[in-house]
Length: 82
Image (cartoon, rainbow, N blue to C red; front, side, top):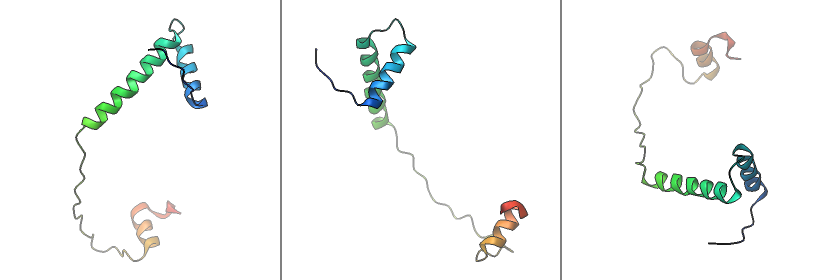
């Protein structure tokens, strides 16, 4: 299929960079390869299973005052936290 396509500056720069990386590649080959890669990764992302994070109670460590953030940081990270 023949078509006219207007590329944004950042996209044109990325295509030019890829052309320089592959000196024997034609503009047609590079653009087709980049489009295929983008479409393939988009399809792969749709089919990927969702990663679910389940919250867990970590409890409260005895002896730490969670209302005193400065003191808590000093206790956990040492005096160099500042």
